[in-house]
Image (cartoon, helix red, strand yellow):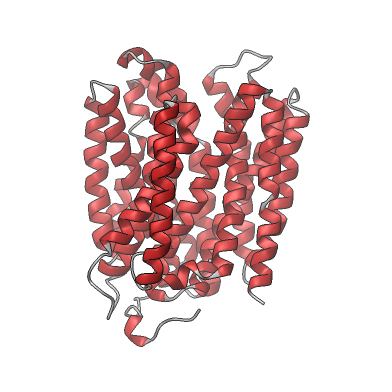
Length: 453
């Protein structure tokens, strides 16, 4: 998810840093807290609707816009880090986080709130992309995998606690406090800036604005289409967005061929192992977010439970994800990322489908979510570690950004499929549909293994 392009494209040697475990804990704090704005938001949808005078269904955009910002901004942040260094990305993302938090705290209307949420999501993406890139810059391959395992484990635990933390923040200080939890990531921003890599020696200094614009347009169109049902977008708007998205995608393909070293490097796009592994991870993310949407509904279908109770029931899934991330980090040196992805796909698909078939049994639902969450966490460790070996040093940032865009689009697809199936069938059918999506992680990982031979 190719060898370095030469000494001119290599970064200066980094000074000796902390141990992989200490580094992973620091970076895991950044990655985990940056995602709290997403994990805690669903808890307060009713409160947002009541205060801002909108339908509860419209509050789906509070989550969707944050996801959209993460998805479309990660490639941009990654390329900026390649060209101008991670420290500048940290500074810009921190400013965006502060601005977004202020807007969310003061927003009098839903459009204003969504503007603040977009800034928050973009800021979270910026700090996360720098955090995930540091292990490859500062550690040898074995240390890199261990650090990514610790990083992802802590991030999974933090995100798993998101609903509980969101409910606690809402009860203490209101729904706006729950929507600003991601600002906690700024506590580690100074340390992150100190460790971030400098600009690439010999790399270009100009961002390919045409390529960046086309990637953004394609990503925005895909996210809007996936969220159309949940957010109640008018059919005529959906049609126009679809046409615009197809046009942007076709133009982007032509642009990449004309400008092979531009914003979206041809070396990344044509790396079949990278593409297949990214699609495999997207399938696992689809199962994670799809069942993440369905599981709370299954747990409250026949039994009255508070949001805090549901959040506590879902915590074991985060513990399993943390353990999986650690295990993948430890075995990555002796087991290929492709083989790991096949195994994760089998376990996750089985768990998600089981949750659908036994939806009236809470223990099975929780176990299924644990399997799906473990797949999501393990995939991040395996593939982000693999990227360092697959793409040129000069393109690692944008490659990580593209991977995250595909990864998050997969999650949005899973949530959209789950919502659509619930509308026409049942919660159990929705979980089974997500399980089928998750199973696609296996053939795509197998295709990646075949492409690398």
